[in-house]
Amino acid sequence: MLRLWRTRNPTTFREKVRYKMLRDRRSLIVTFADKAAVRDHVAAVIGEQYLPRAYAIVEDPHSLLDLDWPDAYVVKPTHGSGAAIVVSAAASADARLPEARWGWVYRHVRPEFANPHDLAAIAAGWLAKLYGQGPNREWVYGQVPRRVIVEEFLVGADGGIPDDYKFFVFHGRCHFIQVDGGRFGGRTQDFFRPDWSRIPMSGGPPWADPERSRPAHLDEMISIAERLGEGTDFVRVDLYDVDGRVVFGELTSFPAGGDSPFDPESYNTEFGRPWAVPRRYR
Image (tube, rainbow, N blue to C red; front, side, top):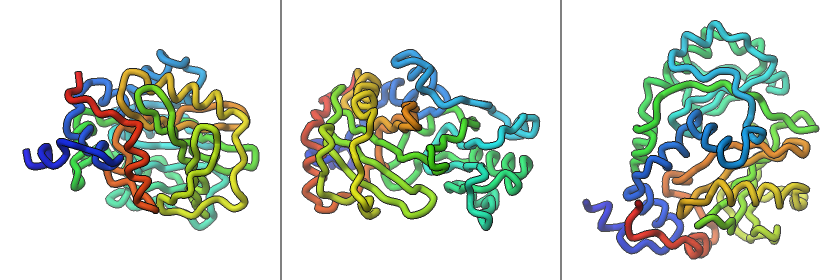
């Protein structure tokens, strides 16, 4: 009850995320958080052509031992965030899989270092974990069936992992765009408005240098993000532009668990301004 009282009149973006975390218990939010179920939702709204290929979705990690593994792929749990094993020839020769007990991490390794038995052990560790039990308690992940998904590895023309475009959609309209690059090395992060004017703020990582040019398919990505954001007060829509092919990443209702950093801090209020939280979620 104290947490509800503290968020009763939210103003900033972080406050509104926490407000939503405590009050929005709609089944739609559970679908957004479920990396398997959200695929059906996305296919229904914008078409399955925007989905990355799924090689397997399993409840039993041992089922992975029978998978006909492709040359490159991504393995991740469906009930949380921040964990994935990326396997491709582009990985560093020194990279290795984490121990199963420390497996809730991002790791990029070469195929020869991705033993299926080790992957199954890491996946078993994922399924044993109830995600979202940090200080702000992301209840939604406790409602998601615990499964493991194996998807295609997205690679750009240069052989690297493509930039991650994150569209902040409020009431069906995109107001801000975050672009993350270099996930496995030399990470950068930039913020823009939909007209691609730079927002002079930082969320932690440095800006890209040289400055990013406007993506060729930005209008299409914004349109997709806004269609996926219809019917809810806020959702962050993550997309990739892979050599002209727009690919869905994920839908995030509670970025950073309500702890998104803003520098300068004034942008915490700026990002909250387009968001009119409802008195009651229905």
